[in-house]
Amino acid sequence: MGVGLQPGGGLSNRRARRRSAAPMSEINVTPMVDVMLVLLIIFMVTAPLLTAGIEVVPQPDLPKVELPKTEAGPIDSQKQALAITIDPQGKVFLQNTEIGFDELLPKLAAIRDAGAGDRVEVRGDDRAQYGSVAKVLARIKAAGIAVTLVTEPVAATDKQ
Image 1 (cartoon, helix red, strand yellow):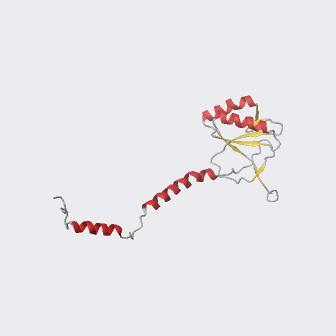
Image 2: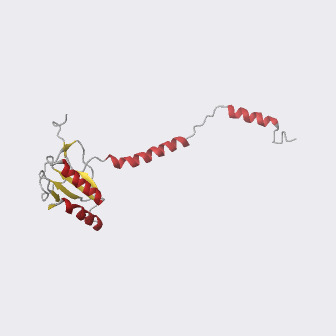
Image 3: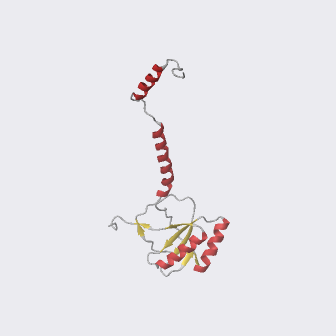
C-alpha cells in the first residue's frame, strides 16, 4: 500500500542510488572561501601588531641622552607623542622640563584627561638605572597611556 507512489515507482529509487554512488565532478568552493576569509581576518588583525619602532625626529629642546641600540626598525608616527627622558643620574624630564617621580602620575593623568597625549615615548639613557626606567614605566601604565621605548638602531658592525 504505500509502495511505489512516486512517479516511476521502484525504479526511480534505484536510479537515485546509482546517481549518488557516482563520483562528483564538481568542486565545492565554499569551504575554500571560508578558509580564505578567516586568513584575511587573521592577517588584518596581526598586521598592525608587527610594527617594530618609531621614526625619531631629533628635537633640540629635549635633554641629551645616549639611547640603547636595538635591532627594531622604524614605524610610521601618527601624531606627536609626549617625550619622557631619563638621564644617567636618574632625573626624569617631561618634554624638556625636569619633573619628580611623585609629580609624574598626576601630570600624565591631567594631560590624558585634557586629550593632549595618548602616547608617550620613553627615552631612557643607556647608562640609566633600570629601576628608574621601571618606576617611570609603572607610573605611565598607572596613568593609562600607551608607551613606546625609544632606542637607536644597531650599526651593521655592532651586530653579533
